[in-house]
Image 1 (tube, one colour):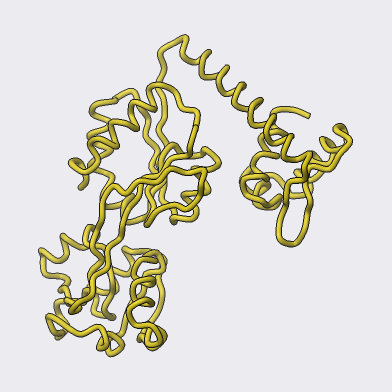
Image 2: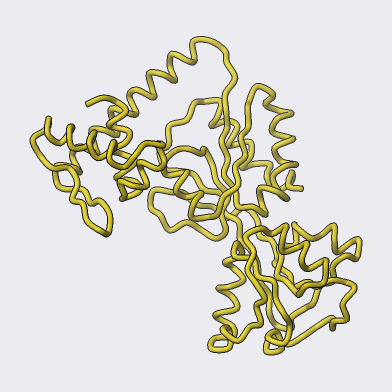
Length: 295
């Protein structure tokens, strides 16, 4: 048993999957299974119950998880304390949903870098569910997701709200306002990233939600915006991603009477995550200045 085995074991308990833990550490599933079996053999007990649904901790596994967490934290404390003996640069890792990553945070991070020049900032784009996973594994210090997190190991606070607007190309003839029941008449370019739109429409239209005329789904908000500008169809897009195009009249907003969608952006952190003093100070600065520094 070594420290790496402990870390791999903790990854399995977090992800509840040996294959996902192996994929995260870039090793084969069989190699990880062999390490785990070797450790179980030395302890003389089974730590995980394996099934098609994933890996579940045994009673001995719960004890192993408790002490493995403590040992890994002690090692991290040692490395941090040794590192504090000499001045050095430090890194802040941020995970954010695409619209926040590409349109909201760049201005904030410019101000952060201006006030904390010794900090190396790494901004990563991901979907909300993936961001929570990265934060749980402590691969990121903070994350920005759509909606709140229900995971008890994560603290979640709403930091701002961005309206999602139905838009179409200004070259296309379209009304300024429609009823929600008329939405099915318009060909839609759908963004798979905007879960808030899907939830709100499902609640509002109920049985008629399936009747929407969705031409195709795109993973990228930029791709959806470009398709809308080219006149391929109407699209729901966050205001922060299209305000320039609305101002330049490349896109036109279609107001839906008595219907509004907001993308509520939450900042998340892992409870009791071990971070150094400089990183904590930096995170506090972002929390205090975020609203005033967004692009």
